[in-house]
Length: 291
Length: 231
Image (cartoon, rainbow over all chains, first blue to last red; front, side):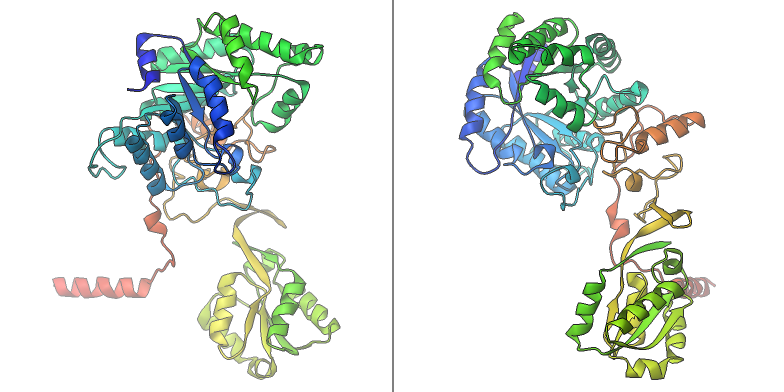
């Protein structure tokens, strides 16, 4: 059974990390991240052609992580596959022993490395969540019985700080009603606002919420987030703290540690996005008393 | 209407070279291509000048009333039979439907497109066109307050917004309001906020298999025979 699901059931505060499959076939660099992050997390998200750029499939990379003894969260976006391929990959996940799946819309191809590609979006994420829930009941999306059902632990994305909140909340409700049992959020920026909204998600939808923590390790990272990442904006007081520091990485670790500590009473877990600085993740968790 | 865009003139010249054409007949259309300012009298005249300046002979031109209408176009081209017979090629400044109609009406002569067909467009005002309908074959506008998410959401999501929406703005076209925010707000203003558990189901693309075909005559004939048989 999924360790992540078990941890939720026990009421444990969960920790997830993130690794990116390679742009090629050699998984050794990814596995080095896995060896660093695996021992200190409950599960690792495995991105699916993130940013609409070509990578090894999340399915293959997730299996490699499972084989190494760690627990992946197989990410599946609606961008690159039609409903046949999406269902086929979810069935493959079942056969390969993958249980956690995070279902996402996916970034638009025109922002990626193959801007000539056709964005498929045959299904949207709400519809795909419903499909995954159906596969768990032994039915394909047309209601036809399967030879063997999946046992997927279905998650979705939420963006608690985005406005207009009423629309975001309705969207999250649609996903929860479709069958998502846990949510992973966009990076936390304003803890107070985030806390208020996560409380609403947890109480009204009965879902588990894992809060996203982004390691703001330099002024350059902040610029990148503000300019390139849709919907994310680093508040001035945080940006000034990092930019003004003689050791920005040290301050970023301090900030992430504070956030993790503050979120222990707010969310069901944290998802740490270290942007390649995997070695500092254990330090953050130790600092927050989570080792 | 069908929005078309001019094709690179170099490509048109290349096409003419493939058949060694020296004499060219040009066809435009009084409908969409005229409104789109790509294939009306003005643009047909411009292409004729362009080709003449490059040493081609323009044997004649015709801006058909509705170029995609096969019967009409046949009649109109018949009036230009002599000019057509001396032409080595025909260039058609219409959508792809018009090009194929001309190619069928003049099957002996090589016919080349002079435009690219872009989209089914709303005319916002003269010279400003926007795509609002993709002719997906299964309209959801009843559920979405008359705003099409299939077309106007860059990802075509039926249930949105996606995670990139910020302050009501679209992630992909950041200067635009998110389609799903617009839908939500208009439904709300009309007191039609969507009820709980009412995500829009996945589309049925089998209703939009190509090539599309409607034959009202055959339908009427079938209906007539059926009612005759019932009597």
